Image (cartoon, rainbow, N blue to C red; front, top):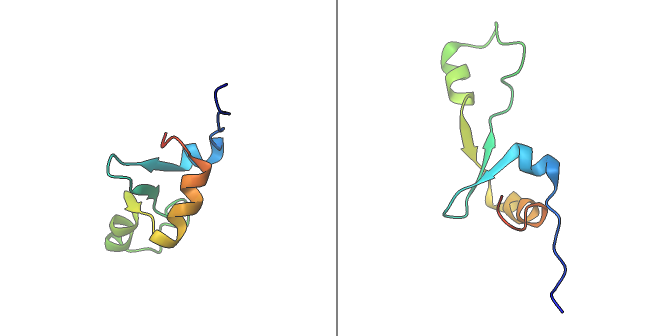
Length: 68
């Protein structure tokens, strides 16, 4: 008999992406609103994707067992 399939957490799948090397990418925070007072340099730095820290990596790997 085959083992049970694990479900992927849908909220995590929408927020994170796993690279081929196993790193987890996330979107930058503080870029949704109140952007007038932030400098262009700060907005550039916050934009784009960032690599997740190692201490949070295990938690996201549990939510996304198949690396989707």
